[in-house]
Image (cartoon, rainbow, N blue to C red; front, side):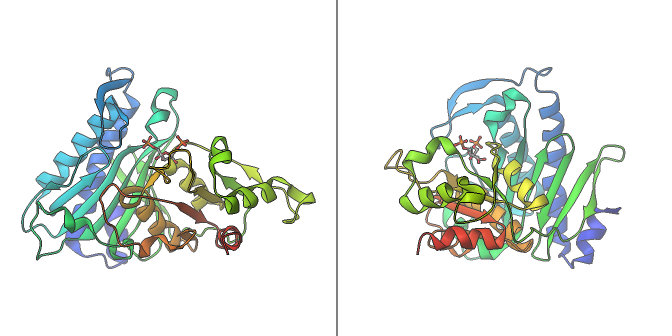
Length: 322
Ligand code: AFP
């Protein structure tokens, strides 16, 4: 099994980007340790603070965010960061070459039940003409990402990452303390019989999604002529990991539960990095109106509709919107 840096050099990843990735991964190793010790280290439960999303922060959210932020800003490679847990972007090194968006702990409602959680990150080249403290740095489409990935804190700590030359799977080997490449070029099967959606929102979806899911539920007797299984982990990292491993369709569709908030997932640090990983593995990642990575961001905390996974199934879903 190949170590991380030689594997990245095989993909001709520039040395400064390799150094940044190694910095990010150093933070994830520490987060992985803190997650495993959360009960023993007094890190369970919530703080009394709300983040910019209006969500009460978990103690581990705060610890993971501080760790990630500090290590990135001290690295010297990073011009600015944006995080799910920060109100706006945070300036780093004025001459830093990269900007990084991240969700330090995705799926934090799973912390208390010892279920899957993870860190998601997305890297762009910084705009040399904008100041480090200018949040407009982050108004770059997903197509301009030079690297994206997530680290899943599960039974094994796993890294899934792309630099635009395929999506690769690494496992944290605690015996030597580094990530080892275990699968090069993950491929999402084009067809699937598995879907992931929060069914409790069904009555709030738009008509096309209502109809699509209703047809899946009809199984062999319905228009699709086959049975479908359903899974929902409530952490995008877990659901996307499953579909990268064995296929599936994942969606958080538009809903009318709260007219001011028709979408749940965040573009910059959830939808875009996952879209890059899914597309590099042969899948599709779209909204009902087009490709996720083509969206021109207007805000760091912008939310979007998300439909991604096995190519043929995503196309089936989209056909209901035509
Ligand atoms: P947090 O990172 O705030 O825990 O949110 C997780 C998430 O954004 C995404 O990872 C899940 O797919 C989704 O929310 C779960 O949403 P439900 O609460 O509707 O299950």
